[in-house]
Image (cartoon, rainbow, N blue to C red; front, side, top):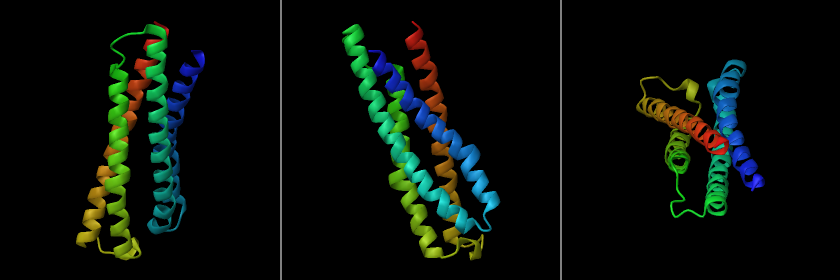
Length: 159
């Protein structure tokens, strides 16, 4: 059963660590170093997509291993915990971002051409910026919930 715990922890490390790296290292660096927002977006967008799919995979593996661990260790009728609920919310938020928000942002970027040449008062640019705020808030929510899962998982394994 220690391999189940190790796999669960690895899933949390990869996903939460990826979000932290993306938000505090990758995105700020490319928007500072690259000469245009267009180029930076061309790096950030596929990186975020990969991070989202890594998160989806991590959530599925975490939930499977956690439920199996509960079943083997406790043989309880109540297999679902608050950590599972938080993980499911993280999964849903990630899928909303990846399947709804990001495609709409990509569509707007395509219609605008080079985003740096589009007026800030253009309705497409305003909508893009609004969706960017949503994307950031969704990712922040996933990070905060993930930190909650880390705490709950640490508490669970220390008991």
